[in-house]
Image 1: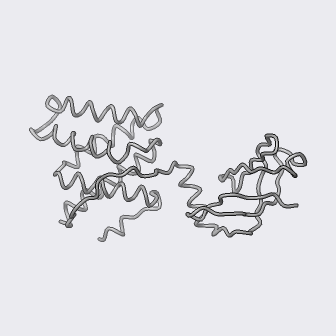
Image 2: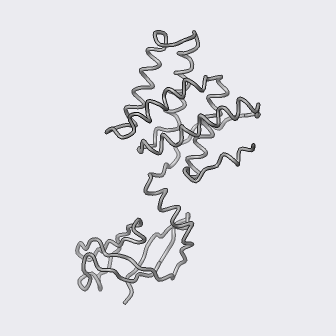
Image 3: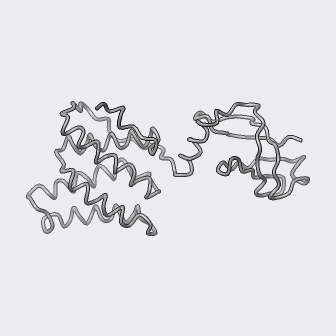
Length: 214
């Protein structure tokens, strides 16, 4: 099995790179994957609770401070410390608990892959500050890839809000864009379905701006 075969539609490229980096870090430090599994189980159980991500980081710190009491070996505290540091370094920008749970689920799989297959890890790049995508951003990215939007393309949109000369359009039930329509805002109504033209696209192919057309 190759690393490419681990790629999943459930992760964006940025999230996949983070999972890859955390797994490399933990395997290089000989961290027990079963101890990571305990942390993942905690997050899974609390994923629906308010502030689930901050609760998770607090839980990791508790594991480190209580490692001697709850551990099964002299290295348990070291395992917890490695897990806490890797998660803090690489996941500090993740605000969505479900996204974090997906990433850590793949970390567990990758750790076993690296360990069991004996894959050379090499040097690991120091943690950066990646831009994490929320679940909504990830969904928009998938839509962009599926639709292959083009500048000048005319598509259907729903007017969801009008504030002065600013109109908020909803496209494909997911993408929301607020545009200035000084000449058209007064003639539009909230809830109305209209035609808009794509004016520009973002680097990932998603829509950056649109304009109403008669």
